[in-house]
Length: 167
Image (tube, rainbow, N blue to C red; front, side, top):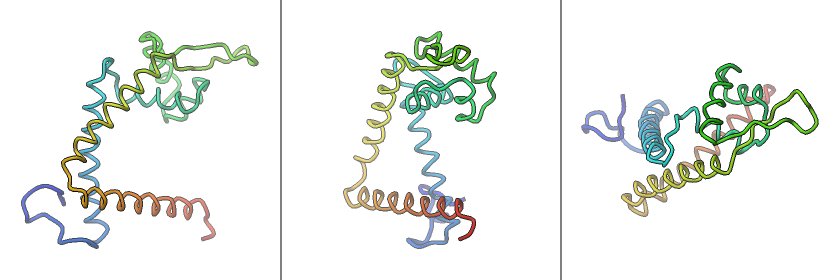
């Protein structure tokens, strides 16, 4: 496997390497970022699982979802989503409210505490990432930024192509 940090034998030969070699390097970097992300989140005042954080983020971006829609958004089964919401509700992070127009439907809404925890986790993650970026030189940060913009643009183009089968 190609590594970003390791002995010189398994390093890539330079910019413009074949996509698979670069993909392996990026995968290593993503693993490092995932660890940084997880460790920063675990340092928050309320420790939540990645699944719980993801549910809170989904509800933050789409307030008032019902349980079925939350389960579909997270690609989990309704019973799993229900247990997840039970734990989040017990922790005071979300509440279940009756839908104002559909009596049989329950909406899931973040509490103030739920938003506070999400903000704390986001701040801790940003601080941890900023500490790593501060250890890089300005040119390296600029190159990383340019590379990430190019990656997102290429991903966008790839997504558009897969959405348009006639291309």
